Structures are given as structure tokens and as C-alpha cells.
Amino acid sequence: MFLGFVIRDVTILIGTVGLWWLSLSAEPGTPLAAGLSIGAGVGAAICAYNLHEWGHLVGAHLTHSVYVPAKRLISPFLFSYDADRNTRGQFLIMSLAGFAATAVFVIAFVLWMPQDQQAGRIALRAALFLAGLTVVIEFPIFFRALFGSTVPRTGMFKGPTVGGGD
View (tube, rainbow, N blue to C red):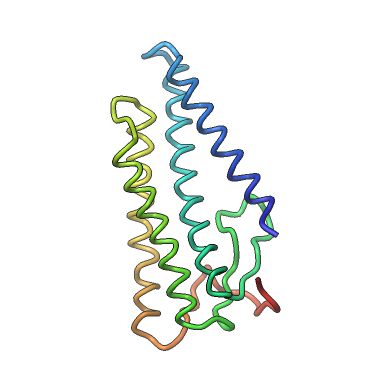
């Protein structure tokens, strides 16, 4: 069901590692080195974002939530969560799993991203920016669910009720 997304995200990861490796062998200070470093840093940030989304999916799957895969591989989201057919508890766990994945990539980037390399500086700053977006965008939704009685319906969760689920 999600094989296309796995292939997409593993390809992005391999491409990022390749760009990083190439950036290390490029002549420092050249446009080529700068371009490779920017690509590697941005690629690492995209990998971090993807990890966050996979965290949400794992949380949804482990709670047997109703969801459907995104229709296109170019979608920034892996799935659509059915706010009508899932419980508040399922929503909270799905949300927490995404937050946990974000915490993992922020900790990993802080501890291991080489700050003496342009790619590492770009990756760390982008990861911190993404974590900040999570706080600004997703925390209010999470707390509305935590202290409310229903699963919040937001722009990300609109759409027809789906049947089944995995």
C-alpha cells in the first residue's frame, strides 16, 4: 500500500547521502562544493520531514486508525486521516508518534550533524525550522484534541469518510 512512498523516501535518502559524499570530495569554496552542500543539507531536511510523516503513519497504524494513502507520490503527506471514524485517543497517539519522530531527528541532528560543514549547518537549521513549524502548526491541533471531546477537523483531515482502513 505504501511501497511507492517507501521507494520515494529511500531514494531521497540515498540521493542525500550521495550529495553529502560528493560535497566532501569537492574543492572547498567552489560553486560546485556550495551547490552539493546545499543539496545535501536540504536533502537531510527533507529526510527529517519524511521521518516526521512516517512517525504519524506508524502511530495511526498501531492504533488501527482509519486512513488512506495519499493519492500522489508528490504529496507532502503520506496519508489522509479520517477524523470522523477515529477516536480522540487514536488521534492523540498518531500525533504523538509524529512528535516523537521529530524529537528523534532534532536530537540526532544536534548531536551528529557536522557544523564545520556547510551541509551540516543547513541541515541542522532546516531541522530546527521544521520542528518549530510542528510546534506552531500541530501543537494547537493536538491540544484541542487533548482537552476537547472530538477529533479535530482541519484542512489536513477534510474529505469524504473512507471505508476500511489498515
